[in-house]
Length: 163
Image 1 (tube, one colour):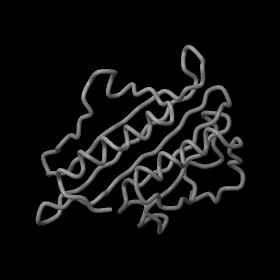
Image 2: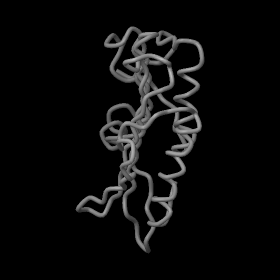
Image 3: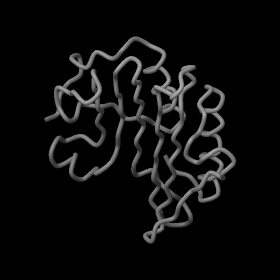
């Protein structure tokens, strides 16, 4: 996924709007705070959206996190180089995560760039990393998280272990 610099800000705003349409209450950024796209010393851009899912409980028992990073390319383009989409549902006692990070390490070790995490119950996993499928953008990432939350509890035993 490639975007021009100004389009990254618009993209992040659209992701936040999608989360809010699903009823997610953003905690990071805090209510009333602006969404920040951070620029690192190497020119890469990153953002983080963390929210509480509308489960009707206090304290909230289900949260999700959306993080992406875009590395700078020539001519003002940015290419997505990392993502982390995660959901923790304490009520149903599971965690699902979909990651693209440390690409060189994962490519060298497992011959894959993406991986998943599955814990059911939370804190207990059959292995550290499961074979994953790429998630094309943040919109698909959010829908994947919402499907995990509203669907059946994940069956971690059906996933292929990378470790």
